[in-house]
Length: 155
Ligand SMILES: [Zn+2]
Image (cartoon, rainbow, N blue to C red; front, side, top):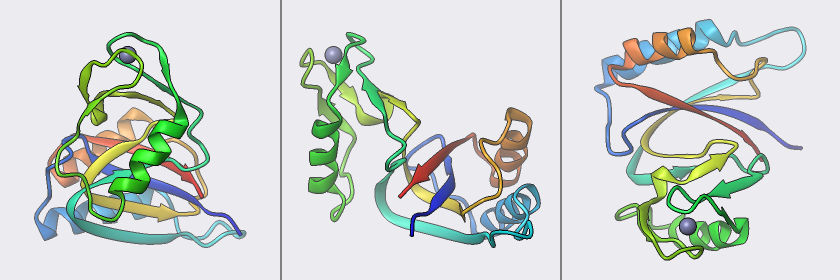
């Protein structure tokens, strides 16, 4: 049994909302992604992470590109990194990339499909829709009080 997860996260990895804003944003998400379409039942979760946590897209990750030299970075390098950090969280996002030894933020690597880092997350498990368009992300951002990104994971 596999799952698809739509995660909405603050664009700023360290940022966390107040509880009221989190609830308001979840109400928007529930409206945009209705629970039952006659086939699957979507489940919703709000998560506050104690430390910056990777929000990765699972099997949807096809390519990572270095923002400094534009070369591809092995997905294996990424998987090893996640294994090391997934328990402890990320103390910071600074990393030296293997392609050109540039010092960059993990948050600035180009992930295809997108991945992110966050201390707060709204999730819709098995949503009956695909990517949210910009105007709907703007509604979530307005409710939450910060810019947001979306991650679509397949696990
Ligand atoms: Zn590079």
